[in-house]
Image (cartoon, rainbow, N blue to C red):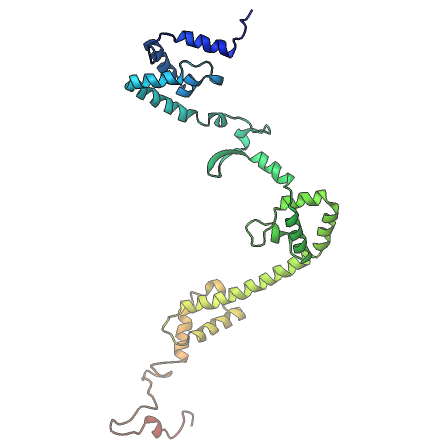
Length: 304
């Protein structure tokens, strides 16, 4: 038959009798046992506090007194205890195989930072919470009704990160499931959302076409020499060929030199269109000491 459990006072008396007439500190044999337990993975707190860790090997006061008497032993004991404490910190959470809902953390677990701490989270539980949805607040509900009355789309205030974000879509879906009247209100307000969405998509498509044309203009203009004064004329020639189908957008870069040559031939800046003689200005003075210009001597036109 097991012995009757001792009361607290009896335990204190037994401990007092055990250490009566024992010199301060820890006996040599017990100090060696203490150090061996530390090397086996225990800590000073476990060996001196008792409680759920079992009966204490020595009291904390006697351990501190022994540290004062033997500093070298104390240094080694504290070093081993600190190392064991760091290894054991968070061991319970690290060794957990399942979350509170019974999901395997080996399959659904992940490590993420939450409020500055590295935590283990369960993706299956997160999916359950998302599908269940949260509880919408009354003030947020009023704002949602106002947005729906203004013909705003659900996506405009249920997408996280957008300027007008109000509530998660899962939270709104839960309220719709639980409130049939509100669900009918949403359906009534959203019945024309498809046509509005098509109009919006078509407008965006037209804008993208115009934007692409503007980009083509600046892209083609950048291919021409910056010192060319009539770049817009060459761009117009290229756009004309693009519209008629004589040139494809992906082949614009290749014939640029040809367009430059054609433009220079049509609008010569140094030589005549016909022949190799340089062009002469009609405003040029014929003599250094006179005011007569070359244009004053022109008596007939080119085709006279």
